[in-house]
Image (tube, rainbow, N blue to C red; front, top):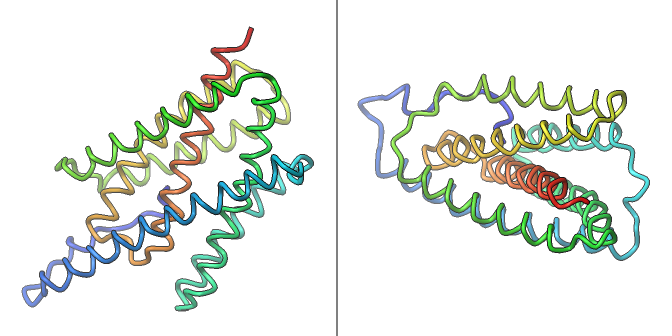
Length: 233
């Protein structure tokens, strides 16, 4: 998920620009990003396992959870900007482990309700969607430079409506609508961030990894809610 608007590095082309050197840097960034993304998934899985085994996340307040997550993201960015990459890595895995705790809470509810197959369906759908969109982004020549602002505005709208629904409306239909829109939104974010990664817009594999992790995580949660709604009696 894009955390802020960026301008492509190639928009300020210099005649002395060393293309082979830049290609090497981008290639390294891509490899490191997806290695960290894989490690982040493992940390999230560990968090989910702990939550499902102990119930440690059952009393987590949504608003406090949201504030904690935003705080960790900003702390990560601050650490990266200061060159404290070791600290940023610790924060990355703390972030993904904690989101895994919340995921474990949700999965426990579905499995406890006899809807374990829905979890499997959502997982497969997320993996297929992510793979297809990644291949599309890597092979497409679509220009995503103008996508940042509308995607970010849409994200803020989803967050606001989501909180309003949780605390006031408490409507399952509104929740379904939010999930449907979120699934579409984070699908576009996968394309957007994949393009930014391969174009070298990200300067840190840590921030690139957390952005992509959030895209996948939110896509999965959205699909899980949609499929769960469709399979309820």
